[in-house]
Figure 1 (cartoon, rainbow, N blue to C red):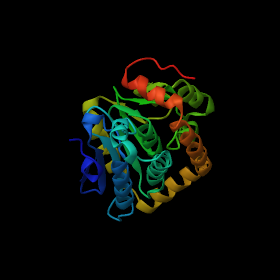
Figure 2: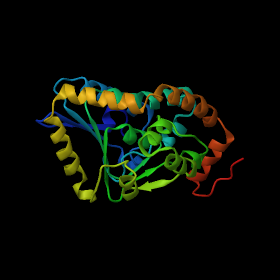
Figure 3: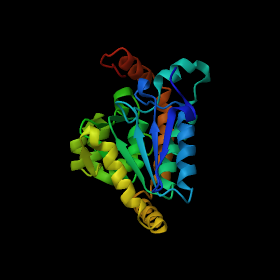
Length: 263
């Protein structure tokens, strides 16, 4: 049975104050159901405010970082599935947790990062990727728009033109391209990613905690002044789209492995 909630997250802490939170649902490509999102928010917030924590590393077990919302879990839940409003609130809360936690957050992207998984990576302060990893901006491919603040995080990092290309076309961005456009600071062989992330984290952990906190806050404030407005636009638009025929067709085509026919 696929673990959920806190059981789906592994936490490792070293003697330098580096906390590594690993999503451990490899049989679902680390897709996130609602209880796991809630537990992840609690862990990021709790460890980030712990004075013994210096850096947080986010990672995925198995072949993926995280492929976003667990559509299978939503289908299995039936009438008990989260509402579109709840889904959007959860995505926004997860991204806010990463952006506002007072310690640096490093994403070690070891495979595909899609949907809210892309937002989780983009919200991190530093991103390292394995050579076979990629960022999948597949929102429009299934009849949706970017969420999890991706509509502001991506253009803040790569500019409007490049962001529009990636988001409108639903691109899969390779690790090499991610580094080229500034989304990733380094690309490593898959077997070296965790060690490289740990080395980067330990270097930051030796720095002055308060100075790093205020630096992160200053950079976020300068580049993401539109965060609240972006999240509001995403909420309104995505709630509409999640209830649309195009989204139903997008999910059906993905599950049936065929090209979608949108309205």
